[in-house]
Image: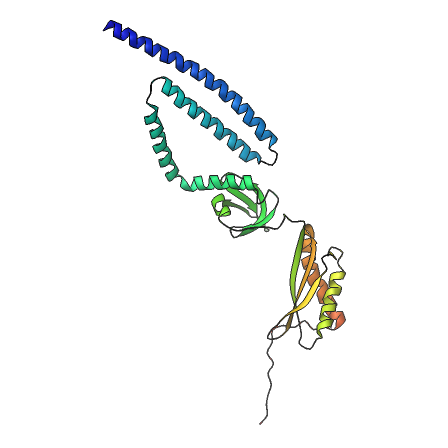
Length: 266
């Protein structure tokens, strides 16, 4: 019996020494791999800083989990049972926080694909505003009336995203109504004249004005002009003001909804 215990003690001591050596090796490898990944992420300039920090932390934790399993195996622990237990715990945890997990992975997707960045003016998940920050769980934006809105990233990735700031040029589409009594070419000339008065409106692509539709009380004309993205709102409101004055100079009547009543004498 003493010989058997001595033998078991020797084996236990050998396992402990192996585990310690394995721990030191894993510690050194993790230090090296962490330094390498840090350098790679530092060189990836297009990678968002928040995403880079999250990925570095996730890799660090994963490496230590793998090291822990190897060390436990060296100590004689049944790692198959440990892995099964970790899988069950992970599944239960993921089910209990599935909404949080969905927002997390959506945040990683947004930070990696970059459909927008801080400062962009966007329409997303039924909200319109300027992006303030993109986090791992929420996207923050400020609306035009200065309301701070936090949208879960899962809702952001599940919806269409309109980014109004990405392209350098924008097209301004407007509709103007004139009387049926006004000549078509006169109305077109008046609108084009208003467009030519604004230096912010580009001449290439050229301004476009055509008759759009016949309505109950007026004729509708569509006007499409191009401008730099930053000048969009000034061009939009400026055209509204200049077209009114141009119509007045050309004698064009700005029609409105009305009903003509004809009295018939019998």
